[in-house]
Image (tube, rainbow, N blue to C red; front, side, top):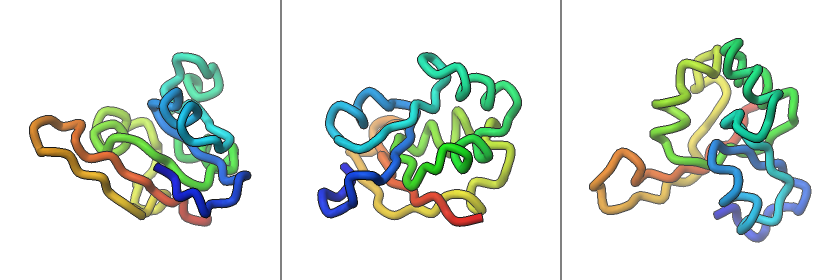
Length: 108
């Protein structure tokens, strides 16, 4: 998913972080709040964008349906000011979860 040429210290975040940490080999931040109380707090306070920046995340990798859809309201900011699509992996178009995206976290 993340280019093998990326430095080993690139910090990755996602709502499906188990997939990312298992296959990615990069430091990974869980954003769904299930296994991460700080992320849960950020979701509840609708400050996920601030949390991602505080955690020094370089890229967010996940289904667009999560990033732009289901969790969209929890960022607390316009995601276009936080994230830029780098690469899209499109499926067969049969579900909302066909578009898997690598987003670069933009500087403040």
